[in-house]
Image 1: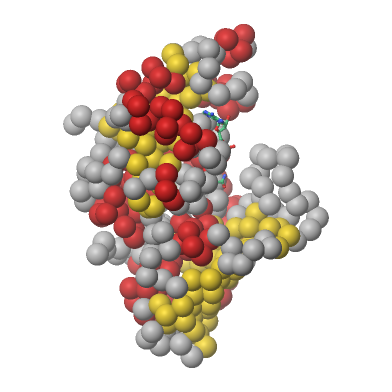
Image 2: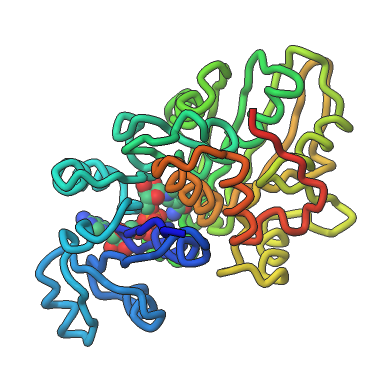
Length: 347
Ligand code: NAD
């Protein structure tokens, strides 16, 4: 099998995970990643024998004993596709500077505006529409979480309208610069950007979102009120989520009552980096009031989009089978491994 040659530009929270995930795929080869500045992540990449390509002349990296395989332009010449995981707005700059002139396909992240790519992507929702695209944007961690569960609810009950609140982690665990440390900070913009972003993936779902940041680094939590077309039931909702891919239903009996315990479960399962890529829905927090379905879900912001990037690579490279791609990715990343009864079908 000819492997897809992948380069990763940006080696931070998302980039280092994408690089690891690419190395685990049978049909992909990680050619290398970019080193933008010297830091512990680059040290770790070197120890893992990942080829490093400098975004400048690389002299400051060499001074610290980092071996440079070439420049970012050298990397572009060796790959079929780039996954750009740089901070927001830089992906778009890189597209203009490198990917368009170099005629290289690229996957972008949710920090970029939707117009950076031909399609905004969540694999289980719209993989078929992304096949053979040159540029795909994997939506943000929050949008991915909303899109995954709302897609399943929409298929089962039909959605008339969604109102949802995002309780967002203040910073990623390694990040000592951002907060809040001791405050709850509302987003003073209604709707928050998440609702319109969900519509880039699920255009026919009416959704209004609000958001606030809190003093935690572990996960985001969403509370959703979904006005359904058909009257929903708690039982059917649990079944729908259990059978869906990349959604995990946890219950009170297992003593997973918080984001802290979800992350501890991920560590106990010995998942890579202690990640929980599935969206976790608490069984006892699913309720019905007339035609309104209420539920709460937790999103591991560092990892839920990684499997999406892997599927986006296959879609961009023309692999036509969404279900097969998702199965391949899930198997390699051990996603849904414990779900057992996942019966997800792509429509
Ligand atoms: P990060 O800050 O952890 O990593 C970004 C990396 O890009 C760093 O290693 C930095 O050195 C490098 N970089 C900066 N400028 C560069 C340049 N010009 N060329 C090459 N590399 C450069 O950021 P992140 O959290 O991984 O976010 C990356 C993207 O993923 C953003 O669009 C973000 O919105 C999105 N995203 C982040 C999260 C999250 O929770 N962290 C979740 C989902 C999506």
